[in-house]
Length: 221
Image 1 (cartoon, rainbow, N blue to C red):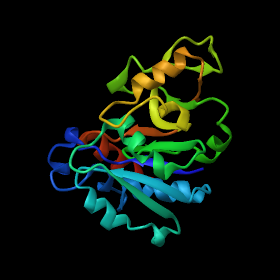
Image 2 (image 1 turned 135 degrees about the vertical axis):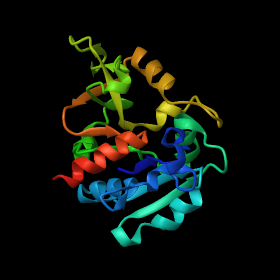
Image 3 (image 1 turned 135 degrees about the horizontal axis):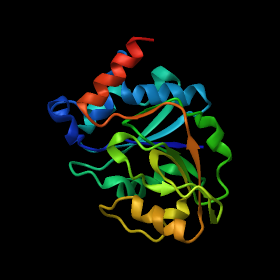
Image 4 (image 1 turned 45 degrees about the vertical axis):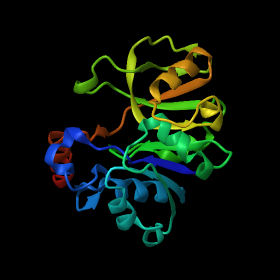
């Protein structure tokens, strides 16, 4: 299973931290966020990566190269100066992702999720990993889904930025700038989405405050 890491965003909420550094290269415990992903995924048997880049994308390419130093293979989907958002970014990268379902991971999350178990989550066109709602998203995004039926638990949870997607999700799309969430909702309505709840560690490292909190937490271990 190939892995696509979404790394093209500007990271505007990070303020000055991303004026000259793309958010995926911001460091935690002495390593860039995106390298933590590469190492975690590599340790669980994932070796083929596609990374989309836009804002300061050359810095990411220079830092990671083709992945040789970690024993993985990296290809890049370059979106130029203007990021295509989540949906448009994946659509642009489809030629690099092959015909099989692929794992999609946001570069700016921190988690201990066991990625290897997602290899078997390929029955539906989309499988989402959800988490308990953080303070900054208290109303959540999606309810837990089991095949075509909504789970009896009607609470909405937050999409973790981790999921498995088939190419069929994007077959009706065209090149351009568009988000992924409306497509997910469309496939939910068609009964083509499953999901699971991760109760372990997960942080959306979207602000300087969350970055600092995570760094302190890891330093205290």
